[in-house]
Length: 249
Image (cartoon, rainbow, N blue to C red; front, top):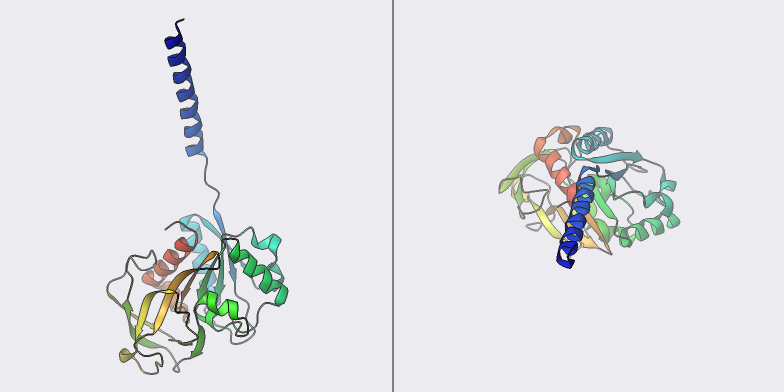
């Protein structure tokens, strides 16, 4: 066989083998990402937590990620945290982690881990400055009860807001914030003219995201009420935040 024919034969054989390998790779199912929900409270406990857990688990089943839940602080250790692509703080309150557990979580984020905070995640760990910067701000106060308010959609390009119109009317418990991190990218801004009790003024972010200390962080202030987790737009908002944290969007 002439050299050129030998070369073409070898090339065709290689392409055939590579095509088979690519086909096998495409046929191999992708391992679902693991998401950990942390819902420990040492202060006020929201009745919506259990509904939130069920909602996130359902979103996981429908969108190819697996959701586990814990309220055990000792799960915040390097060996356990490395299993998760994302850790969700679901309406945690006050002091929930000791010094070694905090250090483990900081290292998790620095190792390209992700954080997603829902509602009272901002009412957590006031003495842990790093955590406050990760979340993007701390709870300061809120008017009594739940109220309908207008939300201005500041960024419609993000996966958590792309489904929304320019404004969004929602009923929830609306937090006022302190120590807001100026380096976050604001997604949603609360219009204080549409309800009573706001104290942040024209700059009243209610959902945001940023890259922080090697990882990703997303926060939304919604989720006080159980009915929040039945709202299609709020569920899609959460899903978009999760997908951004997972690096899908």
